[in-house]
Image 1 (cartoon, one colour):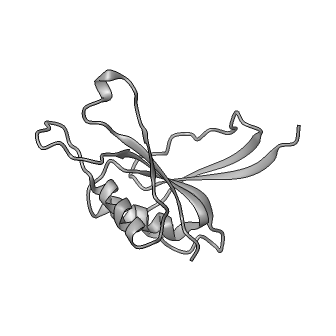
Image 2 (cartoon, one colour; image 1 turned 45 degrees about the horizontal axis):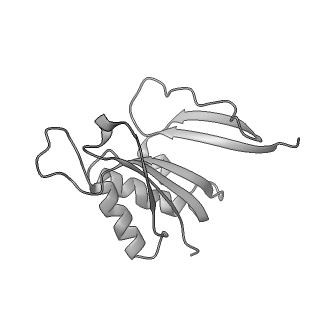
Amino acid sequence: MAHTTVALHCCWLISSPRPPSPPSTFHLPTRCTSRATRSPAPNISSDPGGTAFDIIWVDGDHDFPVVGIDLANSVRLLRPGGYLMCDDVVTAKPSRSTTYLSDAAHRSLVALRGAGLIDEPTYVYKRLGKRHQHPRKFVAITTTRSR
């Protein structure tokens, strides 16, 4: 069986001593070489060296302006038709909640869709167990539009 070779570049924008180790291989008909770096936010917002990304995963469990900036930069860094995925998306913020919740990721995705930069996101349940139903969090999956 032929394997497609892909490169996986992981960038953490948090200040941790060192990022967790990414997988060295996927259990698909794909071989993956990976490189993990810890990078300050300004570096990721610069030109990716003429190479657009195929897929970017954004942590949606943040409030404005952080998640909005992350999503906007991701759209800019993705190739047309590239996948933008965002976890911890809350589509409706409960009025009475004792836990931190932000619908900023959802509102940012709605704005990017309204601007014609991304396709309509598909929302997939993040967790299925009963204890995860309130508040319900999603993983949003969308693609970027041609520019």
